[in-house]
Image (cartoon, rainbow, N blue to C red; front, side, top):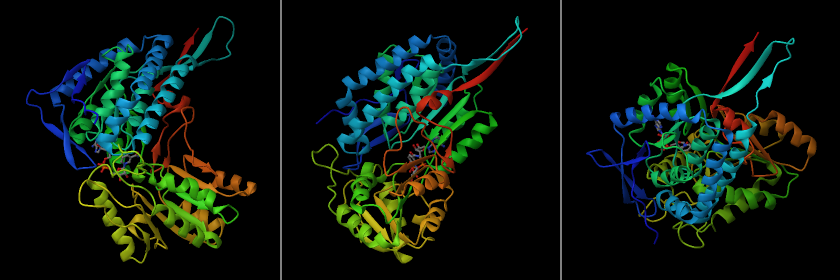
Length: 476
Ligand code: NAD
């Protein structure tokens, strides 16, 4: 059994713990038992982190693109070396199968290497002016960033939150989720060990609302980057507005999946079922609302039920586990509430719909069908292993259902009709659309949503630019 690491806050490169600070119990979702005590930052710690971040920005904004690239690619190499250790810690504190945690490490490796290249491509432009005059438009780092990362991708979220500001020449204070601190600290340590000056990136944990109010009100911070629920995102956007901060908000979704009758249903199920159970459905781009053309509805629903009932659920550290427990006790509780409400309103329960055992936070892979649109689960992000499958007549009705909710993060569509593919790409309101594919991201592609799913992008060249501002310089 791998060891769970000791936990701390990292301020100015120093591992801070003890000293009468409050602690938070980190729990293994397989057992529900505490595996570590996380020291929480107090107001004085946050003030110190802010002072250090201001200094870190003064240092890092003057770094060369080569220095920034060397840190990012060096950290990527260390993540490859430490892949197994990082993945095990993530599985212990979050529950996902080890294979998924290993992939998360590699997502960061790809992103950091891509960003390392981007450091040399942050071009501005020069305007056409008469001889003797010059006007240049340049990109500059925005300043110290406050970055809040959730628990569902304990390695990937901190990687995104740290990588972009560092590539742009900013400093960053990361508050990752208190539930998954070991993974976040592991990623930050790779950067520090690769030569990142200790003032440039720090990690604090605390009572989320205390930390965010403290950091976002400070004149030091110039940008907020948040991933999490729409409710919390709206609250933080208001705090950010009071300090006129630049924002990147990666919020909730309710992923529609349009399945047309010209497609081979098994081909869709081959990706939709593993897509649904990935990370126990706790993914903002999870396929959630299956909008199925009526001719293939029964075949699709029955195939989904059959496959979901065979998914192997267990401890993510064990070989053969396809789906782990949910990450925290709030999730099975939310499943019980949402699924109970749907069934009570007339939805059909095809499989699942209950917890597994009474230890840890396990929940059965679940299929609901013929769900009334007014059921809570058709309107709130379920964030769990539940597929919602409803029949629809044709294209217009299916697009209307896809666009019905205020969310617009990821959407998927399956059809072999090329003209229809183009119409769907244009008409679906989402930041990312997968057509006959479940892959909607990559280190080089912007990741983000529209409407209540937020604004701004992570990843791709846009992820670095999101931590920068423009300046025009006119020389006479
Ligand atoms: P939550 O909405 O309270 O928290 C979501 C995340 O935001 C957590 O990481 C939390 O630590 C952080 N957070 C909460 N309040 C904050 C504050 N005032 N300042 C800074 N950070 C704050 O609840 P939860 O139970 O953790 O998750 C519930 C819902 O959040 C899920 O059902 C899902 O819809 C959404 N969620 C989305 C993502 C995503 O990737 N977009 C990730 C995790 C959770």
